[in-house]
Length: 77
Length: 405
Image 1 (cartoon, rainbow over the protein chains, first blue to last red):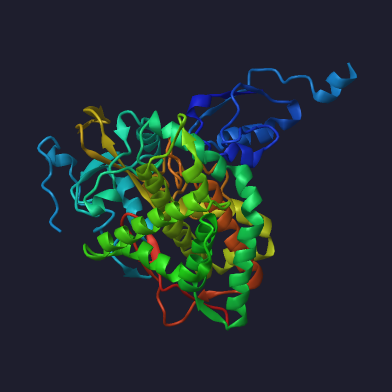
Image 2: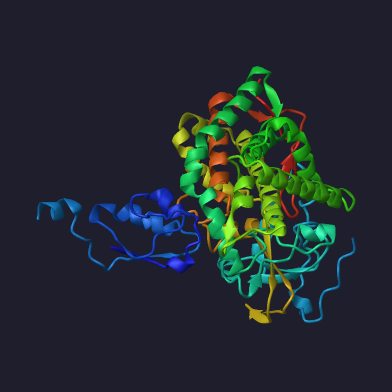
């Protein structure tokens, strides 16, 4: 799963961050960092909740994208 | 105050007898529910014209659907926020900053101020906010089994935090509350008088902080630079006045509406008291159900909007309390469900002018409810009393007497 971040639409409500601060990172002004977010498999529920919390509809959920290999596996490889 | 005639370009069939100022339930009403009263517009069209929908009797278009309000408020180019709502009380024309600036100037000032109100900064402020709430509530609990929530808690709490931002002590608290009250709810004599006092106060404070800087908001503002230059006196004033106007009444009113709801709904009250982890989510639902402001924009060009011929200069109202009861946006919008998920409410507005203080306001509300419920046993509206609610530019509640005897 991938979260498509429409950065220009973010207005700093920070509702995504309130749901999942480790997935949705904010800059010093409180707006989401630019760039789409690849969601690890175990984080999908939290990430989709965060995306659905956006009052501006700045976050789109792309369920077709494969989850990145987890950090755990990557660190072993 | 006579209402203005409906402009010629507004088709008569698009005019509706509805106003946030004069419709049923908007004037001061004992045991009223102005938020529920406005929800009736959802039985009608998505946009209509209200001939009397500002404090000075001007007409506005009224946008009822959340998705259309989003479209208006996100498009600052077509729908300007500059109408000098404060300065016009004095017959002047300067913007409150950043609210009444349009892009690109807006972004410059917003970037300057955002870090002061960011979610991370608010986390740092939290202990002070909590300490203040506890002190006030402990005093209330120690002095009896009843209190006037607005006078004894909501206003002293929110005004104190505002004063803390300005590096000021509490000794002028009552004066500030009086000014805010006169400004928002006073007549044609009281309003300009209060506005003049507020401007004089901000100007004087700015001058003091220029001379002797301290670690507070006004010092930050007078020392700040935008585009390589310091702020002008008018910009300093516009910024200070907005902090005053926006920070006082709105959060206090939200806390009042929330405690009134809990007083009348003992099951929800007990649930939040026994499971305080639910308060964060519940506060969002209460923000959805009882938001306090209507945003008004000015059309910068002619635009046909969902069949309505909006013309340059027309006012367009996006009332948060209307969007938040939109059945297309919220399942059972008139049911208050403190466990509601996916609650993308409009209490802080949409678009670039999203309430700068929203993160602080949220924390004040949550902390206020947490500490109140932790310290005050089962409470209800005091028998023989009736809270008075009102609509208008900022919705509010007064005479909220709670009893826990």
